[in-house]
Amino acid sequence: MRPLPFVNTTYAVISWITFILWIVPEFIVSKRRAPKLSSKSDRGSLVVVMLLLWIGIASDFALSFQLPQAAIRSQRVPIFFVGIGLMFAGMALRSYSISLLGRYFTFEVAVHADQPVIEAGPYRYIRHPSYSGALITITGLGLALGNWAGLIALLGCMAVAYGYRIPIEESALVAALGEPYEKYIRRTHRLIPYIF
Image (cartoon, rainbow, N blue to C red; front, top):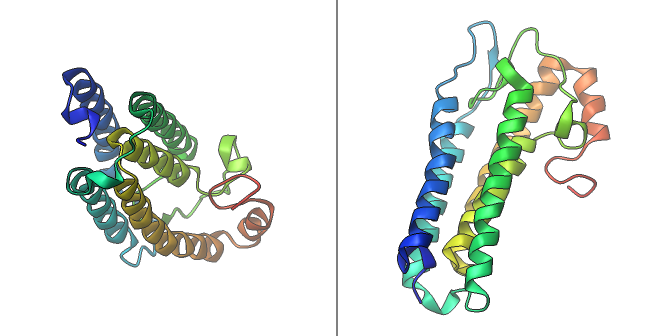
C-alpha cells in the first residue's frame, strides 16, 4: 500500500508544500550563528541532531514503500490530514518558541554572555518547546506518510538525538546562568507540560 502523497496529485501537492514550508525556514534559521562573546559547548550535538533527523526522514520514506504491511490501513485520508495539521501545529510552536528566544536562539549549543532565563509563553511550562514543536512536526510527517514502522523509526531517531542534546544544553545553561536556571529546571518539564 503506497503512501497517499505518492498515489494522488492533490495529496502530493499538500505534502510537498507542507514539507517545504517546514524545511526552508529551518534552513534560514540555521544560518544564525552565536556571537563571539557567547560560550559554546555543543559537543557535536548539532551534527548528531541533523544526522539523525535526515536518517529518520529517509527511514520513514523508505519504510513507507518497503514495508507495506506496516501501512496505516484504516482511515487513511483523515489520518493524512491529521498528520498535515500536526506538522503545521509543530511548526507554529517551534517558530513561536524561536521568536521568544530572539537573538539567544542558535542551532549550536551556545549561551550568550548576557542571556537571561526566558520564561514567557511555552517556556513557562517546558524548557525546550522548540524541540517539542519539532517532535510534533515529525509525528505529523510520519502520519501523513501513513506507515507505523516509518513513524516509529523517525521518532526513535529523534528521541536518541534529543536524548543526547538536551542534557548538553541544560548543563551549558546551568554553568552559564547558575541558580536562576537551576530553579527554572525544578519548576518546569523538558518537553511535555506536567509530564516530562
